[in-house]
Amino acid sequence: MSKTFKLSPDEIKPLAPGHGACIASDMITVDGHPVRFMYREAPDNEVDSGWRFLSGFEDDDFMSTPSHHDVYDVNTIANYDPTILPLLDEPEGSAFEKTPESERFERVTDWAPDED
Image 1 (tube, rainbow, N blue to C red):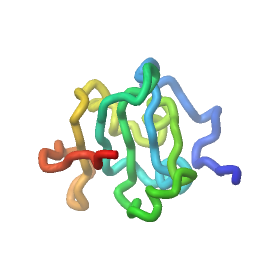
Image 2 (cartoon, rainbow, N blue to C red):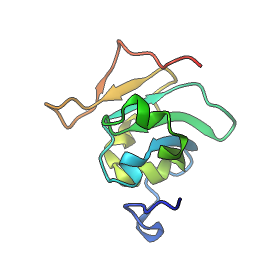
Image 3 (cartoon, helix red, strand yellow):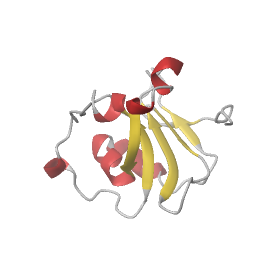
Image 4 (cartoon, one colour):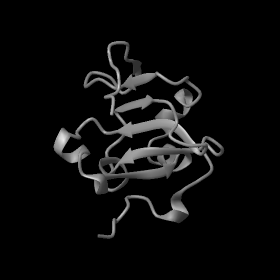
């Protein structure tokens, strides 16, 4: 199945080059929702930044379907939502969310990624 992305390749500008790869949800890249939850885990390989970007609307069923998320350059996701830019140098283990009351990211301290 082919995905129709919200941004075309010619709309992607160099906002965050050199940050490596990430995983992002189709709710961001296809549906156009902003990033409302982002976390950084240990990278899976030498090109992985460890960043994971979600809209906050994904449920377990959505996330358990591999075709609903994909690997992207962090720069691509920064073009979908430039509000992630100030946080890209945060260390592994960092997590941030935008609450319904705010359009600014706040650090999450009571969250840990699921272990495989």
